[in-house]
Length: 311
Image 1 (cartoon, rainbow, N blue to C red):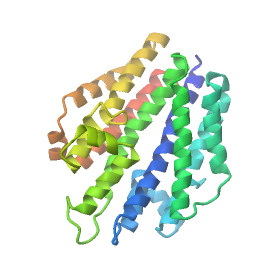
Image 2: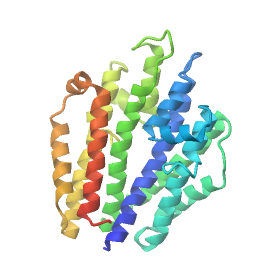
Image 3: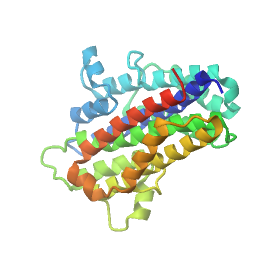
Image 4: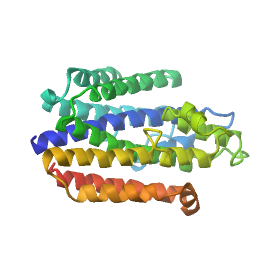
């Protein structure tokens, strides 16, 4: 396989996963903002921009920090490189360049997602925005389903590798949403609003039911973090995606003959998370742990780019 083709496939996986994450992030923020009579308000939307690495760029627009302005920026803005529109546009252009490496179902999912957002120019009401986001998430699930029906060849593994690297990053950023969200004045840590905020984080990764299966004695921040970081039973957990990345790199090494720094970094990361206990994460600082992990994931992606000669 040509290095350019491999690069296109890897980034299709990343951009499709990023579009879904941004949709989930906006949906989570809408729900967090509406939790109580004293919602988080601007703090919630400011945190969404921070987690999406778009806060400084948004501030340069001079627009006020309102739900509609932030949602429009994260969904539609052509000036935001990580907006859902730009992610789907780039994924579609890459897919057109490697059309024969995708199944018909995979291409159609990408194309439908793009056409669904290209026909819109702004979000509507809160419910209308949620409806749009849910439609985009559904198309991405269709894309994931198409991936899993592909032959286990290089094109499949590069698509999955991009998705896995992006999902690892997104789960860490999603957990970090809660670090940035400020409880409304008068609300206590561990109180009803605090628990609702953590519950909303679970909802964005479709893990409410999974949490009840794994933990019988009620919701707590410690258990939510443990499940999303360390429990491999949850496919979107950090530990599960770390394992998946190692497996995908091993399969690609077998097929392509390329093995190197990316494999070493991925296995070391896997060893570290295998030896990590939730107590260490909480004691050392959840925010610090997640930020260090996000940086490590960025460096691993660079190593993948070099190892498979994407540039």
